[in-house]
Length: 132
Image (cartoon, rainbow, N blue to C red):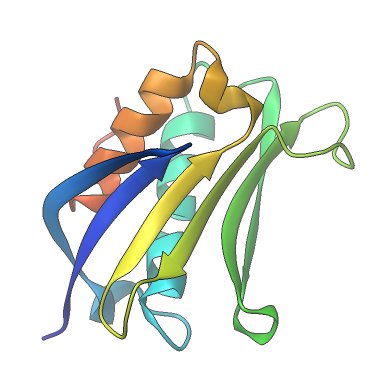
């Protein structure tokens, strides 16, 4: 079984994580970043935009997980302007063949939602599927 050690990077601050992720469950591309991006995308949709979710109702999430273009990211844009510049980019990158890292950056990382975003990403990449 392949296990992935993950870390969350927000802006220039690196938060090492102690949890591991079973990439066999979530891998949907060549390398762990695609599985990690899909996992985080699923959790964002469930926890930030699902029934009863609060705090992100002004935004829309768009997954950009595409092995052809070597991208594994989730973009949050204003719900009323889907063509606008993203306010949050959550991007997965491969560290090596079995490890991936998540980075979150953009204007939302400098606002009131930054603490929640960091906490949620850290929890999800540690293996929890709980919402805050």
